[in-house]
Length: 255
Ligand code: CIR
Image (cartoon, rainbow, N blue to C red; front, side):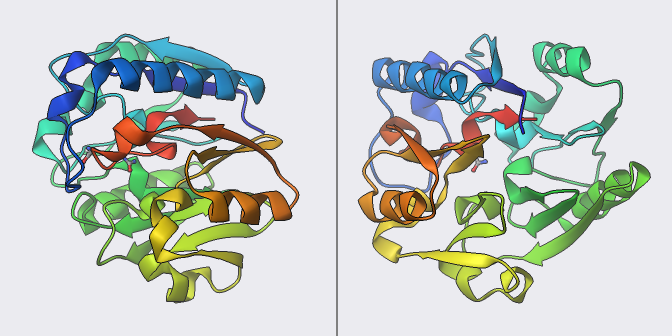
């Protein structure tokens, strides 16, 4: 069960966020409304939501998932691989927010880079994608820190996706949404894999929050597959975040 969530309100500069999509720039007013609806869905799922202030100097700073890994034992502040995002990880209000919940806070250090969108938690075990943003030095530091607290981690090779959780979502009870390159990855064979088709690949980025799964709006096949598994579904429109490669998981830290 998750008790707490941290989010950051998008800033006006969101239109300058990093992107590989060719879908135009996010509309700030729409992004704000979508963010409010996201917070409402999280609240409905029974978590306490800490909302941090927007940071204009960091266009991607609403994607708080990337700047920290929140485990049951400690929080680990990352060192983002994207240069424009590197200083997001040390923003004082985020560290203060985490200090309210965690006695132990650790840090990824140079030359390691990690963005925690590349990390998927399955109980006490953590899958760490080696992406353009997360390097082997960062993943090794992460695994050593996890082991220090009695947790474990393993690396996963990646070729196509931005982040590991761009194409994977663990819904607990052994259920794993898989898209693209992860459909055939040997690491995930033991799961009950729910394969997401290419035309709805973005919809693989869902989040399990207690009895609910939050699903992006506009992915009916994904939604049906999740409903058929017996989950209660909450739908949130993330169209403005999709324009800058962001999705539901990226917008929160859940612990
Ligand atoms: C970036 O490229 O860093 C942002 N525009 C999107 C980050 C998405 N975060 C995530 O998948 N965890």
